Image (cartoon, rainbow, N blue to C red; front, top):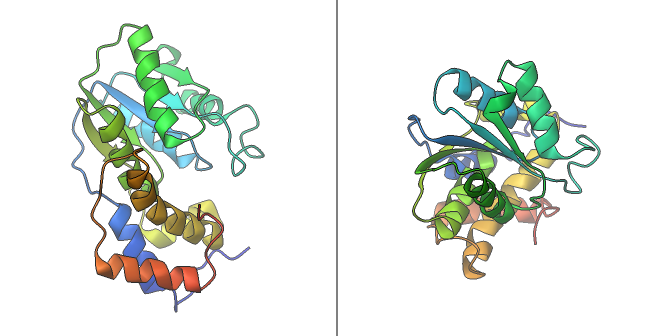
Length: 217
């Protein structure tokens, strides 16, 4: 599978990549929430931020999806936890929410888990794939509006991220799909509204015309 970004697509892919990166300034929070996906780098970065003192507790949230079941057969959150333990995060600093199958459930079920444990949370760091930041933020602000949300992802340039995933087509398809979901999920009441410029929309439409439609709703 290809791992190098084609030159004729680079500008449009970079445009979407930049749009989804919210560039939030990291600051200490009450909890870190690692959103399940096919990207084990989410757990890696959650562990790094824990060791840096950004939060005292990590919740890993995620069941399985068609894109993750082969890689994480016991569930995304379970595998994330195991990886974080290997990276030195103490077991008593990790909670696992194993039921969420989408970002809305990540937020709602994590909130319920924290409430059930009596953990008071006024601020969270949402750790996700780089191109999931904007959707995660919009979803969290809809479902948990009173919490202070900081979004974070491994600080990798686009090419380095593609290399870490090992599949350029998957990354482009996911970028296109997440861009569509910014508008579609707000219209369905799943997330707050986010502006999309004409420049970003034009890049998104060109990538659809180029055949990157596998993750469209």
